[in-house]
Image 1: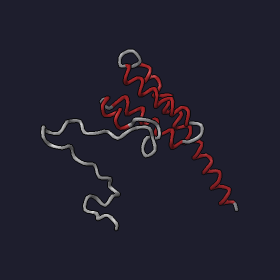
Image 2: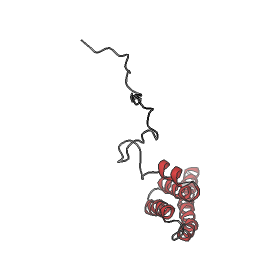
Image 3: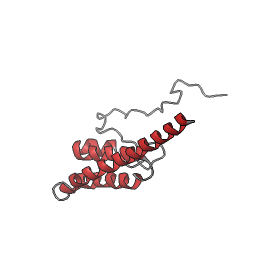
Image 4: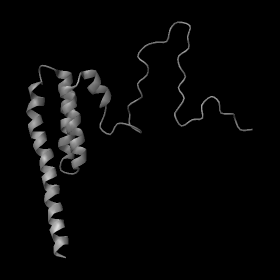
Length: 130
């Protein structure tokens, strides 16, 4: 029984520290984001969006807070095209409002664009049922 109580107290202390770690990270990141407010408005907007999402998630979900913190940090460090394409919206992915990105270049003149075949389909070799 004593071991169980000790483990519960240790778990409680560890989870309290984890929330404090995300909070401390956000406090350190906020001045960095504010520093670029007027020099790089696009980068500031993206980093500020992720910082706000992290601050909103911090009291409830540590993992989500860290995820948004990392996205805000990437928005500050990565080139803008990489930062915007990799982190489009919070919760992006299946079911989000972000459409897939198409090819950047057009196919050569006289050549049809490549046909998209979903990975779960059988492809053009599948025979229709009769």
